[in-house]
Length: 111
Length: 114
Image (cartoon, rainbow over all chains, first blue to last red; front, top):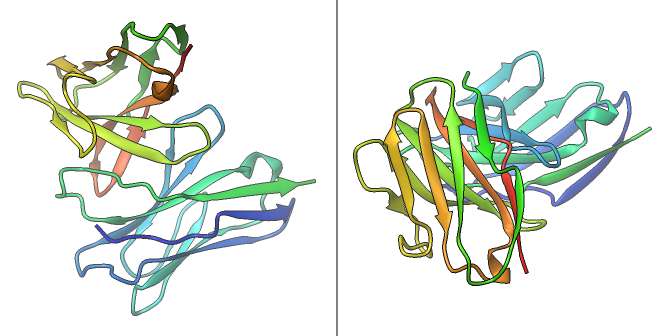
């Protein structure tokens, strides 16, 4: 499974757009890029997944360049409740469903 | 989606004892997973549990230390045996969501070993 690299922490203010970039230089052709969010004292929660270009849902957008060696999770107009750890994962489902979590990015949103 | 509950939510145990953690899902699922999250750290997969077969353990985790049961498609248990303070962690179960890398996680069991 491809190794991922993310910033350890980020700070933001309410109402700002936050972009968290993940590097995955050895991503394989069949790999998907998936992001999870974990609030304190809770299990991780699936946010978004993509293969290429751009994916958007009600929570976030995911931008993937053509070479797929990185991806950017974009959170529009963050609020205090978006304070969490965000994990970028790369892999394919038929790897036995394993999720290999990297270190994640701890996002702190301030008023 | 799936709703997952875990029992107990937290416990404080003495070293040398064992604790069994239960994971209940509100729907039938094929694959269930157990993770450990040490304080301030990311999640580490302990094992994969499929109903009707032995659990598959990841490197660094052994059945004698973390025996797992999977008696049916909605339930699993993880036992942390002969505990030491190094076993103090949050233990989470998750289930396969049926699509690429979407899994649903339980709230976790916070274990403190003294």
